[in-house]
Length: 256
Ligand code: NDP
Ligand code: 8X3
Image (cartoon, rainbow, N blue to C red; front, side):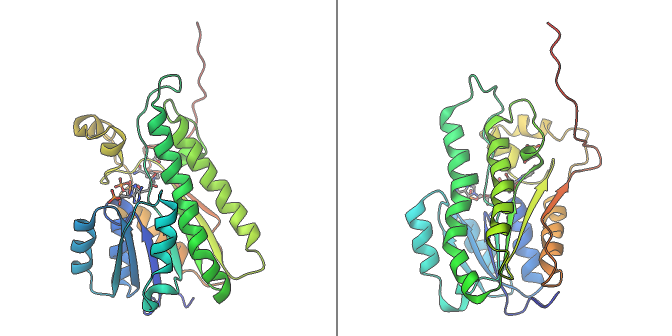
């Protein structure tokens, strides 16, 4: 890929209706890229398409529906089919309960979306990239995939799996020119992440960011855009990023 020349390049973003995906759609469109934008909320996708100045193809789809994912990707219009960059961003955390009483339905949804959905989209797009011997897969992991925190149980586990899947993809693809990057942000405000986690409880969600200066969706988008804009022989394996007010560490000890 010619660095910083995005005209005629196709960027496929899952979860483009809010947060990081929305910021990335705007940033790549401003750079001139053609976009495939996927999410479940059609009204948001329509609004976004109308607001962006580059060619956009929208897909209303739940990434956890395996058959549907394969069908919508097979049905990409020719002008959008040769995907240069796939950004597997769709994902969510649900709940913050301890593992002994967390909802199994929530665990299923996180596994189905963050891990299986990401795998379905990747598996559908990868053969074309291999055929063209060109492409970049950028996955949205999380610091929660590396560092445990109370109540992060299954969310962190799905993101740890995404990190390992990213590395294993790189290994499978070592004989190709395809790049794979895992982006691992810490606390980020300004997206719907915590409202989704707390099932619409906006007050509880706002408390997560109280008296902090979290990352923004634009900060994460900048990291993605940077990794994607580097010369074609450079692969950024992973980017771990946090706001300055956050730090890893703090092993838990219970003194009973
Ligand atoms: P948002 O909740 O703001 O956005 C999530 C996006 O994913 C939405 O566009 C949503 O669209 C889409 N989505 C969710 N489930 C599905 C599904 N089943 N099928 C298709 N699309 C889906 O969250 P963020 O922007 O904050 O998060 C984006 C990614 O970054 C996630 O993978 C998250 O885990 C990760 N992350 C977030 C951090 C944070 O602190 N915010 C930090 C580290 C990582 P729709 O509802 O229209 O389908
Ligand atoms: C989101 C980061 O720490 O809120 O992936 O779980 S965290």
